[in-house]
Length: 285
Ligand code: AMP
Ligand code: MN
Ligand code: MN
Ligand code: MN
Image (cartoon, rainbow, N blue to C red; front, side):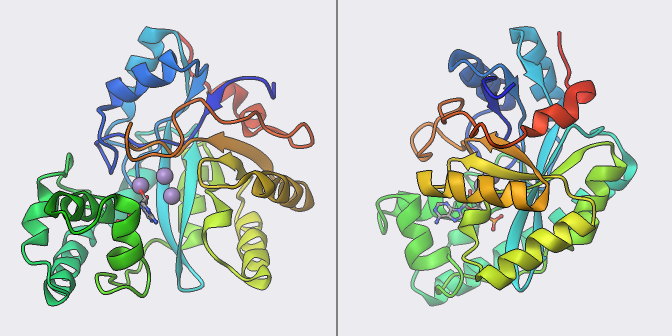
C-alpha cells in the first residue's frame, strides 16, 4: 500500500494552477500516478472533469479540495479527500469561503498601488481561470510579467507574504467548520503541509489537537512543501497523534512548481497511508 504512486494534492486553473483539470490528469498519468486527487483551493468546480479524465486514463481518483482556514491568526490549509462533491453542506461552505476573495483582491491591488505597482487588479485578472477564485498567485504572475520580480517566489517574499506591503489579512473558514463539511460529505480531512506555517511547537500542538478533536484524520507527510527532514518529523507527529499520512506534490504549473506530479519519495514505512481509510471512496474505471 505504501508503494502506490499517490498524488493527493495539486491545482488546476479552476483555482491557482495554470493547466486545465484534463491537462493535470494527463500529466499525472504520464508521470506514473496511479491514485490521483485534484485539490483546488476552496473550489470543487473541477471535480467532475478531473474524475472523468482520470477514469478515461485508467487512473484511480479521489475527489478533493484544499480549504483555507484561519487558525491562531494564521492561514492553515485543510485538504479534504474522498467526499461527495455534490454534498450541499460542503458546496455551501466552500462558496462562503470563496466569497470574500474579490473584495480582498481589490484591497491587495490598492496596497500594491501604494507600493508603486498600479493596475494590479486588472493585471491579475488576466491570469484568472475562474472569476470566483482570485488568489495571490494570480497577482504574483502579473508582477512577474511587469519585470519587477523574476519569479513568483520572489514576489511573495517581497510583496505578498504576511507582513509585506501587498499583504491583506483575511478571515477564512473556521477549522471546526472545514473539518465538519468534509466529514459530512463522507470524506477525510488532512492537515496540508504543516511544515509551512511557521508555528511555534505550542501552536502546532494546538492545531493537531484541535484538528483531531474535530474529527480530522490525516496529515501531509511527504509534500512538495516539506524538506526531507520534515518527512520524518511529520511522520513522527502522525504517529503521535494517531493520524494517517498523505502524499502530494502541490503542483501548480510546469515551470513555477518545484515538484512535479507523482515524483516525490514514498511515505515512510512507519506511517499508515491515508488512502487505507478511503478504500471504498476510491473511484475506478
Ligand atoms: P491565497 O489563497 O490567495 O492566499 O494564495 C495562496 C497561494 O499562494 C498558495 O496556495 C500558493 O499557491 C501561493 N503561495 C503562497 N506562498 C508562496 C510562496 N512563498 N511562493 C510561491 N507561491 C506561494
Ligand atoms: Mn496555490
Ligand atoms: Mn496550501
Ligand atoms: Mn495547494
